[in-house]
Length: 515
Ligand code: KIV
Ligand code: ZN
Image (cartoon, rainbow, N blue to C red; front, top):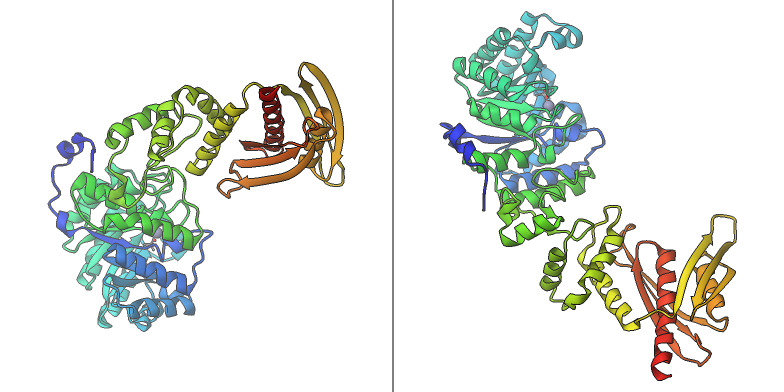
C-alpha cells in the first residue's frame, strides 16, 4: 500500500504523543473565508456532515458573531449532533462569546493578535490590554460552560516571551488548549519546531497549530509542529482558506499516517469528500494538488506507465485507494505504444500489432497541445484507423483547402484535389464553413455528388473533446452508389473534410475492386 522513504523513520523515530493527535477542521470557517467561496446554510450543513463522516475530531463550523445566518447555520449543525465537536470562532469580545452561546455549541475558539504589528496597527492596544482581554474572554466563556481553545493571532511574528505570558494566563483562566497560528505563512519548519518546543516546555495544555500557505509551507510547518509536541492540527479540506489557504487536511492526514504512523481520519473517505467540497464550493482544485488533484495518480509518459503496470509503487508513494482516489493511465502526447497496447488490452480491444505505428501517429497528432485522450476517444481513433485501412490507397487526394468564414460574411471554401493524377481547383460558398468545404470538394471531384447524411458527435461531450464525423454521399462516380466515410479529430471543419475524403476514396476503392 505504501512505499515512502526509509530515511523518514530513521530521522523521525516514533512520536511519543502519536495517539493524542487530533484533526481540527476549519473548512467551514477559514476555508469559507477564501475569496470566491460563499456557502449557503444548506451547503454548510452538507459539508459539516461530510466532514463528520470523514472523522475529523473538531470542526470549526463558522464564526457565530459574523452574521445572523451564520449563527443559525451553526445552530443547525449543532442540532445534527455530529460525532465531531462543533466549535465556533470568536474574537476576544463578550458579544462574540454570547453569539457562540446562542448556537448551543460546547466549544469556542477565541483569539486576539499578539504581534507588535497587529497590536499597534490593527488593534491599537497595548500588550497589557491584549493580555487582559484574552484572559477576560476565556474566563467569560468558561463561566458559560464552554470549552475554550485560545489563539495568539500572528503568533509566529509575536514576541516569544509575551506569547508565553499570554498562553500561561489563558491556561490559568481555563483554556483547555492553545493555538499557534502562522497567520501569514511566514515561518519555516525549523522555526516552527523551535517555537512549539519553547511553548511545550512551559505549558501543560495541548498545543494546536494553524498554518497558512503563503509561502507553500503550511503542511511542512504543521508536521514540524507535531514533531515538537503539538497535538491539534488545524486544517481545511483541499487547503482552501484565506489567500493561498491553510494546511490541507488530506495532505496532513496522509503524511501523519504514511510518515509518522498516526491514524487520524478515515483516509479512504478523503477522495469522495474532496470531490464533494470542490462541487459545493465551486472552487476549482489544481490538477497537481497533492493527494486529491486530477493528476495526483495520473501517468502518461511511456516509462512511468510501464513502471506502474509492473508495480504501481514504482511511481506512486502509496496506492490511490488508500486515500479513496483513482489512478488514471492517460493516453496523450507522451504515451508510448506500451501504454496504448495495455489500455486496449484492458478495454478488451483486439488491434493488429502491425498497425500500432499508425495508431500512435494519429494519437500524437490529436494529443498535440496537451489534450488527454480518454477511453471513448481512444476507441473512436482505433475505429478510424481500422476504417482507413479498409479504404487502402487513396485515388483522390486533397492537396489544399482554404475556408473563409466569420460573422456577417458568406462562408467560402477553395480546394485543390488530385483525382487519378489530375489536379482540380474549385471554390464554393455554403451556409457555414463545413457546408462550404464539403460542397467545394464535391464540386472538384464530381459535381453530381450529393450529401445524404452528415453526423457529428463530440466523443466525450467536452468542448475540447475530439469529434467524430460520419458522412454518407451518393454518386461519387455517377453510378447511384452510396459510400460512407468517417474521421476523428479536434477541428470540426478539418474532421468533416477528412470524413468526406474517406467516403470518396471508399467509393473509388469499391469501383477499383469491380473494375
Ligand atoms: O490565521 C489565523 O490567524 C486565524 C485565526 C483566527 C486563528 O485564522
Ligand atoms: Zn487562519
